[in-house]
Length: 129
Image (cartoon, rainbow, N blue to C red; front, side, top):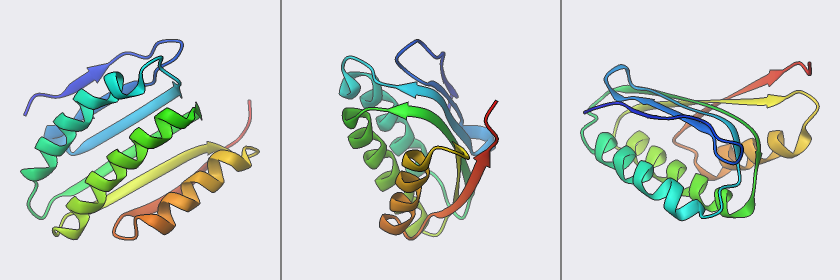
């Protein structure tokens, strides 16, 4: 499957899905005007990729400094797909990067970890600049 790259904008994150390497990442901020329009096609491509995974190890790095409520809904869709792939026998690891002083992002990652128990979450605090 062809990799997916979407450069970051002021309101949307950089997306790098290197499907051949099973390495996925999202970095930046996420508050696009229409979150469903932005995330819909990449979630569809992610699901198609995950359907072809068999006993693979998938790693997703997420480093979002901010995301709004409509992006949160889309993130849940991404995690539902990843959790399904993990339940199907794949190893799914999410590296959750957050500013060490940002309790909101940390707590959201902890909530995702509690909700999607088949995914292995790795807390990755980053020192403030």
